Each structure stands twice: as structure tokens, then as C-alpha cells.
Length: 153
Image 1 (tube, rainbow, N blue to C red):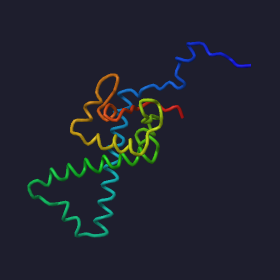
Image 2 (tube, helix red, strand yellow; image 1 turned 180 degrees about the horizontal axis):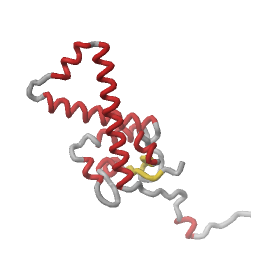
Image 3 (cartoon, helix red, strand yellow; image 1 turned 30 degrees about the vertical axis):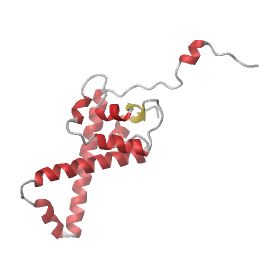
Image 4 (tube, rainbow, N blue to C red; image 1 turned 135 degrees about the vertical axis):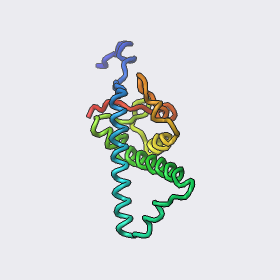
């Protein structure tokens, strides 16, 4: 015997995702940002201990070094976020703590390629300010057709 579904059942999505609040998104950003700089500092210390002459490269006072430092930092932050979301299936340390996850707009899990798109779209200047507002829909979500939702796990 087959059971029939009513029209209401057909229109009801199988999974309902709740977008993460602006506060959770801000917490994700702060946690990930701090963790990234702790990693970078740790890497710098290890590099300096392993090869002391390399420390001179990072203390250069020449003009333009500050800009280069910022560009390299943006690139490495994007790489860190991309790798974290790719490896941990839409999660970073901040998202693990706040119990949120990045998913595709259709509710499916993001791929490694999509994680790298999200990570590198964060390198756009002032992207962090695009997350302000309700609902929180920053550029990296709009441009990659993704969203951050409260995790059910």
C-alpha cells in the first residue's frame, strides 16, 4: 500500500537551516583572526629559531614593506580559512566553538573548491564590514552562493 503525500508535505523542505546570527558571525571572525595570528606568531618564532638570518627579512624598514606585509597577511589568512573550511567540512575553529557551519545555499555541504572561493573572497578589502546587519549576509556568502548556519550536530 502506497501512502500519498499532501501538497503541503511536498512543499516542506526536508531540512530547515537557521542562519547564524550577526553576533555568532562576529565571534567566528574574532576567534579565527586571533587563532590565525597565534599560528603566524608561532610559525615566525620557529622560523627564527631554525634560521636566525630570516628574521632580518621581516624587520625590513624599507618603504612599501608595510603594504607587502599586509598583502601577504591577507593572502595567508585567506589560505588558512580556505584550508580549515575544506578540511573540516565547512567549519573553522570559530565555527566549531560557536556551533555553526558554512553550507551551500541549497543546504548541501560545501566542497573544497567552494571553501577556497569563500576563503579568498575574504581577502577583498572591507569584506568584514559587509557582515554587519541583519540578516548577516557578507560578500563571501553572496559571491559563493553559501551561508553560515547554526549546526545541528
